[in-house]
Length: 278
Picture (cartoon, rainbow, N blue to C red):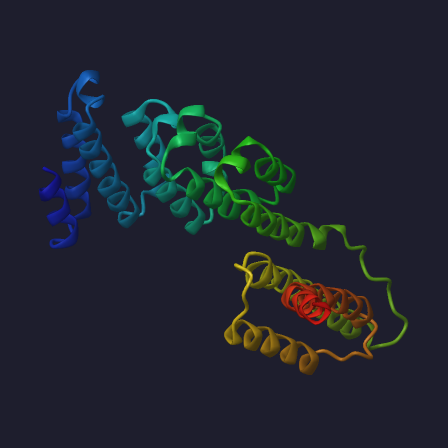
């Protein structure tokens, strides 16, 4: 029946027939004892994956989560790969809030912490549910809490916090003061746009610094140096140092350059000094 459902969907494009076949296949799996069997669980997941795709093609995506809950009875029992599909589906149709409660319950279930796809579910929940909805406080709790410790490495947690900070900054910035001249509105828009670009570049540069230098094995390659040089070249060409919004950024950039220089060349300088002393 699983092969028949796949053929109906992929070959004949008969999505309703494919969904009906998946529904009958799930009913035929039978009792709870069979559901505990690994092979039966794989068939069940296969029918559910095809069923989700069929409902999406039929534009009946709103019925996906209720249909899955009828199959698994509890949200935390849904397999990780199916939970990932649901988060992406509801995010794509612009309804990420539908998955908020289900994903939260799933992630806080202790038995799911050992699932192979646990980290991916946490990442999708953060990026496609919490951040788009503006739930930054819950996002921080997720990253810094038990779920974040299980799902993310230290670098991933810091990157996730940078994403949350980027979401919060527009809400923290005070509204621009009204100007007196006729061009005040255009000037405020230009400053706001440059400020947003600067913040994005700052986050990107911090991420690049961690990836290329903090997480490196101790040696540096010409490719990494070239990439950093190109990035700095673009920054200096694209930004006007005389612009007021650039002053704070240039100061931060100089500090970051000092850290990068120290991380790259300090070990070699110390080694050279010791060899001369000998």
